[in-house]
Image 1: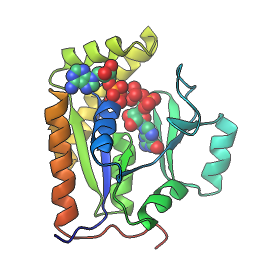
Image 2: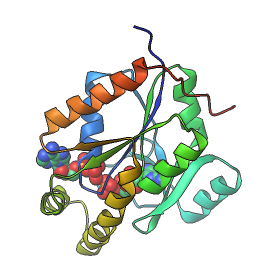
Image 3: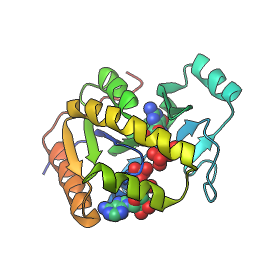
Image 4: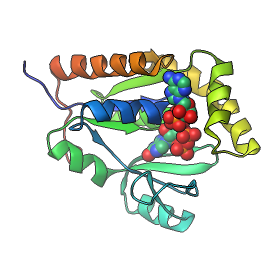
Length: 197
Ligand SMILES: Nc1nc2c(ncn2[C@@H]2O[C@H](COP(=O)(O)OP(=O)(O)O)[C@@H](O)[C@H]2O)c(=O)[nH]1
Ligand SMILES: Nc1ncnc2c1ncn2[C@@H]1O[C@H](COP(=O)(O)OP(=O)(O)O)[C@@H](O)[C@H]1O
């Protein structure tokens, strides 16, 4: 069957399991591209520069904003995060579909630039389970956890305008649903135009 490369956006509240889900889907489909975003958030233990994110200070981030290096960027949980045009180009020019794991503001901005992008929102089974996962991950201090939970409700509301919603209850099931979504949109036509257009 004819397939076309598509741009997928994956968003959802902090701790819902976006990173875990996307990593699982990429294990099954190594050809799927994933961009590395830039951020002013400090690295967590074990996060390497250029792998999880390109970590940079505010001045460097501002310099890149003014040089037009970002496809989109947003303030999330008190730090700036942005998708580099170069990262998107690198993947789409290789003719492969790409996942942007970005927040809801970024997702809606990408939709304005690429109307054929597919926006996928990951929902928690419940707010209690979301808090449980966020605390269980053990990467955030209390203030950062509170901030993320406070933002979660607004993100869930904004996620209502996404094309597809997937509940991350059982990881294997949710990953299967995400893979089916990718298959469906890749095979029903409508190529994602190159960002250089
Ligand atoms: N708009 C935008 N959001 C991003 C980008 N990269 C990451 N994010 C989002 O920033 C938020 C915080 O990410 P992170 O600090 O890794 O924390 P986590 O969500 O708790 O794992 C998440 O919603 C990410 O999806 C980006 O390039 N642009
Ligand atoms: N379906 C699931 N069931 C139970 N725990 C999960 C599930 N998906 C992810 N987790 C766990 O929840 C925590 C947050 O996941 P993570 O991928 O870091 O979230 P996000 O990237 O959305 O912030 C991690 O400890 C992860 O192992």
